[in-house]
Each structure stands twice: as C-alpha cells, then as structure tokens.
Amino acid sequence: MRETDISVKEILTVFLKIGTFAFGGVYSMLAFFEREIVTKRAWINHDAFAESIVIGQLTPGAPIVNTGIFIGYMLKKVRGALATVVGQVLPSFVLVLIIAYLYIKYKDYVLLRAALKGVGAAVVGLIASVVYNMSNKSLKNYTSIIFAICAFIALAIFKFNPILLIIVAGIAGSIMFGKNVGHGNP
Image 1 (tube, helix red, strand yellow):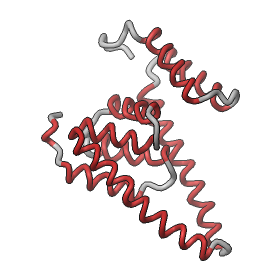
Image 2 (tube, rainbow, N blue to C red; image 1 turned 90 degrees about the horizontal axis):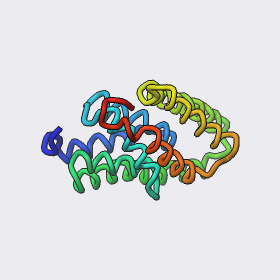
Image 3 (cartoon, helix red, strand yellow; image 1 turned 45 degrees about the vertical axis):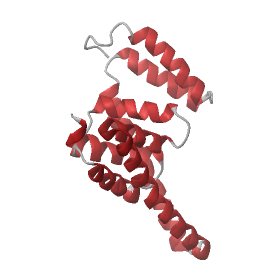
C-alpha cells in the first residue's frame, strides 16, 4: 500500500466511527479496529495489526489510542496519526461528559443498572472475540502457543508485572524466533 492511497479524511471518518460506536474499553475496541481496518477496508494486514497492538501496549499512555496512532502513522504519517487521535478521542470526550451527567442524575434507576450489566456482559463477548481471532492468526506453532499460555499464567495467576512480562517476552521472542524471521516462519 502506498501512503497516498488513503486520505486523511477517510482515516478521520473511520476513527470517528470507531470512537463513537466502540464501547467497552481497549480490548473490545480492538474488535472494531480489526473489522474496520483489516477486514473491511484492508488498509493493513493482520500481521501489521498485531504489531500495532504490541506497539500500543509498549508505549506509555492509553494503549488503544497508541495503537491507533501507530496505524495512522503507517497509513499517512503524522497527519494520519493526528487523524486517528482526533477520531478516537473526540467522540469519547463528548460521550463521557454526557454519560457522566446522566449517570449522576439517574444512577439510582433500576433500568440503568440493568442496562449497564447487559453492556458489561456484551463487552466480555467482544473481548473473547478479539482473543479468539488473534489466537487463530498469531499462534501458528507450539512455541507461540506456549508463549501465550505462559504469559496468561504469569499475569492471571502470579500477577506478574505486565511491563516486565513484555520485556521478557520480547527478549525470549528474539532468541526463539529471531533466526526464523524473514524466512517465512513465525
């Protein structure tokens, strides 16, 4: 893909859509990213998408915004990165203000509490969908599967520091996969 194939306006429009309709936090938004950017528009492939998620997790700040910035930069350099930030943050900013006002005003209503429980359950499903899709595309051999299982155990059971886990996984990945990169192997 050449940088000129996609306009900044297109990037802004897609990220405004994502920022407006992707509820549920970082991991549920990844499902929207994948559908809009990888599957529907094919602006980037799945490997670039997975790498953008890693970069988003490694850098300080909101991981989903960082992921968007990286994708925008790949598509249209600095202007693309800025378009993704505006697209993601502006709808959230406005919606949070509105929701905060409404929540404070109506927080004791049973219907609101019930609706929030339903949304919470749906978000778990969105997150599971992202995990399923990424695992099918990223876990291509037993070594990758073992990496994923070890990371899960380290985080979920042993409460390992996520930053330290990423550093250790990067070093281990360099050792385990480094000789195969560029030769068609994961």
